[in-house]
Length: 257
Image (cartoon, rainbow, N blue to C red; front, side, top):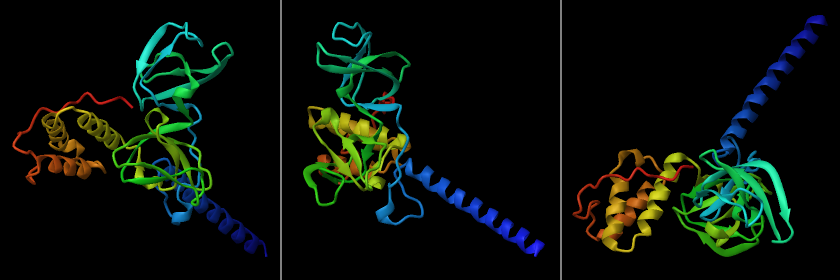
């Protein structure tokens, strides 16, 4: 009887250890929007702790005080990650709420809370995605995000959905396909360069910028590399990657996320 009790206790201990490792693996995978050992309905069901992080939704600046009268401290771009200090002030005269943040360069200041997606991190769509107005499959929205679009995505999961915001909140809604949004550095870098290329005013300049991206082998592992190359082929119209432009020097001045 004594040995039976001891053996049962050992088996229970081993079973509990195995369960902990499985849960740890799933939680780690969720941070990259990929579910491990789960069904599609369970994917992304857990929330991610981004309570002290925010994503800037406008090209904007932080200032020295929670007021329009505050002095300029630093300027950042859409998509930059800000660290929240936890301080918040209501400016009743301006009818604004300011939060204190620290930028990627270590400088701290105040910014209108509306300009920041709090409890969020930056990501890039690796495919076209339909948005939902609410965390419910019956609330399909007319808003969509396209492959290569940069967004802020909430760390909180609601019934298998997460809220996202595009630049200046022009696009917002909920998504439930987290494995189609990546926060990998190589994907973010290629997305930034891709958007910069598309913003060029002339087709020739767009082609040169796109060629710079695809000619850099460091970008070849990106999930949107083929999209960039496809756009290049579309613009050149001859089925050749370089379009007769040769291989320009790669612009390494990517945004610091």
